[in-house]
Amino acid sequence: MLAVVQSTTPTLTLKDYKSEVKPTWCPGCGDFGVLNATLRSMAALKLPVDQTVVVSGIGCSSRFPHFIRTFGFHSVHGRALPVAQGLKMARPDLTVIAVGGDGDFFSIGVGHLVHAALRNIDITAIVMDNETYGLTKGQTSPTSPHGHKTKSSPYGLLASQFNPVATALSLNVSFVARGYSARPKELAALIEQATLHRGFSFVHVLSPCPTFYNTFDAWDAAVTPLPEDHDPSSRLKALEYALDSEKQYIGLFYREERPTMERVTREVVEPREFRIDEYIQRYA
Ligand SMILES: Cc1ncc(C[n+]2csc(CCOP(=O)(O)OP(=O)(O)O)c2C)c(N)n1
Ligand code: SF4
Ligand SMILES: [Mg+2]
Image (cartoon, rainbow, N blue to C red; front, side):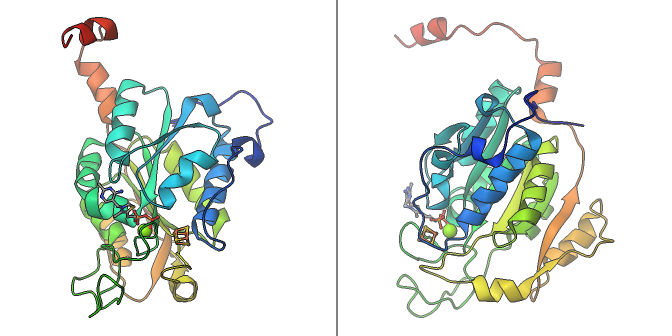
């Protein structure tokens, strides 16, 4: 079933979703591939630009909304998910996409990931994971590997590595996928499915930072499509693939249809007119 409002205009192409702002990322940044894939998915779904909102936190990856011609909200570090969920609760007619980096989603914002999973509000999260804090010049993030040496960890990172896909699966996120920025066609197909999924969709994207931590060669070697016979209704099997320490599986790990909070709320709470002017008066 479609979870998005589709335009009746048949002529939208990738270019129609590009804003006039040119991306300010370093040459070769993985986020270019993610942007391309997202624009492709929007064009394939013919999303109306005036009924689509891209929300981000803070980081190189969080500059995303500036480069897309939909509505956008460049929020606060770690807060893309609360803003996106609030928006969808208030305006369930909109297509809402939350984007950001590994620091944004798994450091400062990780608590919001837990509650987004529990609420199952119909938004899509695209996390560009470069295993580093790109914007602040290469400090470790939760997805940096154990032993990783940086200016902030001169003796090597002493903490262990966060596993985003295994975490999303254990939180029972209703749609869990992984893509690779160097494979934008496959990634576009995943983002398209995630947008169509009715519920909280989590797309983990391997998106290297060649300036501070170049993982292109390592990921070229490790990225492996999930086996064709993988059954995305099996959370246990999905977890097994997510926990593989050698391979980085890409594809749809898990999908489950279950009620979304913005819908259930409207079934149990009688709708009434909200007067913003009266509300503001309370605090005058
Ligand atoms: C409340 C707050 N704490 C810290 C920062 C500094 N800061 C800005 S971006 C960032 C991390 C960026 O890393 P990530 O989210 O992985 O995005 P990337 O730049 O790698 O795409 C940090 C720590 C901030 N802007 N606000
Ligand atoms: S610092 Fe890294 S993540 Fe940021 S734009 Fe440059 S390559 Fe991309
Ligand atoms: Mg990062």
